[in-house]
View 1: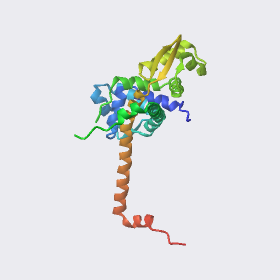
View 2: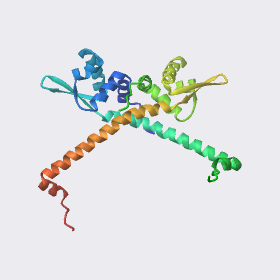
View 3: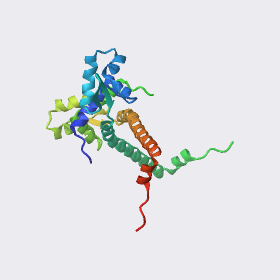
View 4: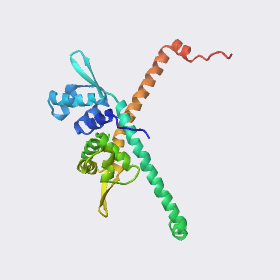
Amino acid sequence: MVEFQTHHLDSVFHALSDPTRRAMLHRLAGGDHSVSDLATPFNMSLAGASKHIRVLEGAGLVRRHVQGRTHMCQLEAARLADAQEWLRTYERFWTSRLDDLETLLREEERASPSTHEKTTKKLPKP
Amino acid sequence: MVEFQTHHLDSVFHALSDPTRRAMLHRLAGGDHSVSDLATPFNMSLAGASKHIRVLEGAGLVRRHVQGRTHMCQLEAARLADAQEWLRTYERFWTSRLDDLETLLREEERASPSTHEKTTKKLPKP
């Protein structure tokens, strides 16, 4: 099984643990924005917004580039895909537990076919 | 679009931002374990392990139950599914950006059909 104890997952999940940073990513998913654009809906100082953006940059989720005198931010989606891949491991596990449950139910049905009959019997047509 | 600024995502992503806690979930995916079982591979005190487990419990990722005198921990996968759902929104965005790129390339092909011809022309049979 793949080992996911990598440093970048620490920083990605840490970046995503804050609602302001998630909202910033949400806006950047619609297109690039300047730092002051990103600060506006939160009634936040530029310094406060920059702090959050630095966390997102550190996690590789945002890339900052200069356009004239404006610092523009761009979403970098690849690291989100890594986080999703990590979670997918558990989705598979979860699905397999559901399969186990189904197997268990089928075994119980075989052990008591009368109960099975009751639950699967078709209703008479009206 | 669904708003994901929910408190439980904060705690889930925070819980996942630590490699020890991710490794604990990884072990619990294989079955229930006691607190001391979970502490062992990290050469960690019971108090240290308990602290991490409390974070996982707080995020709704682990459920603790008492068996005799042992505290057993069990993985709760549903909240991981919520986190994956949040990430899936960005997967869709990312895929649509790839589609945009494809559209752009097709438009370029239409604008310069000679280049298109060169790249799609079949090689003569040997």
